Image (cartoon, rainbow, N blue to C red):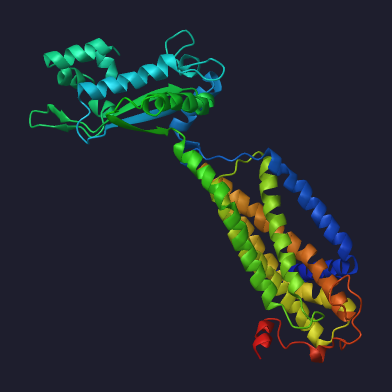
Amino acid sequence: NKKGRTDMFVETIDRGFENLGRFVAKNPVRVIIASLALSVIAGAGVTKLSLETDTVKLWVPTSVSATKRRNILTENYGSSTTGLVKYILTAKDGGSISRESILLEALEIHQKITTEVKDEDGKGFQSYCNRPTPSSDCFFDNILSVFDYDEDVIRASASNGTLISKIESKKPLKIFLFGAEYDDNFSLLTAKAIPLTYSTAPEYLETSVEFIGSAIDDIYWKAQDDITRKTDVFVTTSRSIDDEVTRLIGNDSFLFALSILAIVLVLAGSLFTRSLVTSRSTLGMSALLIIILSIAFSFGMMGWCGIEANTLCFISPFVVTGVSVDDIIIVLEFFQREVDKGTPAVERMPIALRQAGSSITLTSISTVVAFASAALVDIPGVKSFGLCAMFSFLWVYVLTCTMFVAFLALDQRRMDQGRGCLFCQKNEQEVPVTPSRRRRSSYALPLQDIFK
């Protein structure tokens, strides 16, 4: 019947864990080496991993028409987007920028950028700008176009009172002037800033920012002590936010590692006793190795599978750390119970893993399946995060049943032999560890003994 088949299935799983526990307990070193080797091989894929910080690629579903058109442009024309460098000019006195002096400074910057400044290879804006076709002129547009980028036209317009009317002829004006204010007749009264936007090919964006920035340096700070500038300027690019995210990830990596280490130290501290022989604090540090290897496995597998990582993936290590510690505590608790009951050494691990295996298998499989379902989500950022977490939880489960069990077996051998560490000589002054002398519960905090 159905109940009988279910019982048979559960019994098969339990028997499999029992055999696994017996094998690992007999061959702990081999199991550790094999686990390390597989983790390193999988983790090597991190060299092929790429980090995606483009907000469009992260959050716009791949099935929408806009994404499909974007992909067609990329495939046929090399890029569907351009790198935008935008310089925002404001008046130092806080007044309107629709004045002759402000416009003349804006024109000076524009001319420096487009014609005068060169990089170390002698190339200027013309070499890096975005062109609709290879033979066409560089594409850029700003409020200065209404004056034909000509100083004389700006001065003439100011003198004959047509400066504002020329500016108003630029449509749509809100794109070319920031903070514009109008009177009741919709005539321009004032504007707070002039954006100068330059379009470059994405692969040249960093180079463009450097040599365009040198134009700003030359105008505002180099050999200009005798000139009082009337404008302030700041820069933003189409990838400024992406660059900032990448920088933050690099800066916060130390905090990520520190927080994970703190969790592991808490576990190690909870397993510490004043006697080196009975202390299991080193098992807490083995948890750190398992966490590191599972994270490396996750990012490595993403690299081998060609899956791009994103900023959300850096959340998974925190979740993985908590789950791995939970699994380790479960295995350790069942094992400690067998030790306390005086179960023969050869049977401790098989029985413990038989009892603990079903619990950690059920929780681990549920978690892996839940995150694997993210592969069905059409949002690339969520999909990558789900797959990253799936790989991490899967490998935590494998290493808990193999590597940690192997470390636990070695640690118990050390305790049975009265050694303070795996490579220490036997301490003859230590009383052999017997079930009656063990602490009552593996969940008790032996750190409390220090304060007695």
